[in-house]
Length: 52
Image (tube, rainbow, N blue to C red; front, side, top):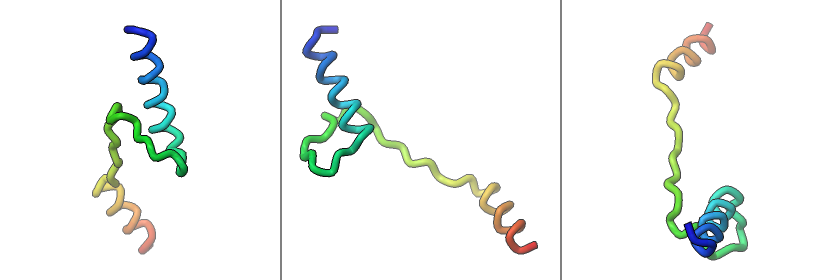
């Protein structure tokens, strides 16, 4: 890995991790953002516990 590629990768990681509001540059599509959903079984269990 070249030094330029390493710097670009580190910059992308920092931008994606910190998400600075004033920064208009994105992380060069380095990472894919995953949003974790709630397991339906856990949600149902939580509802049942709340109703008890």
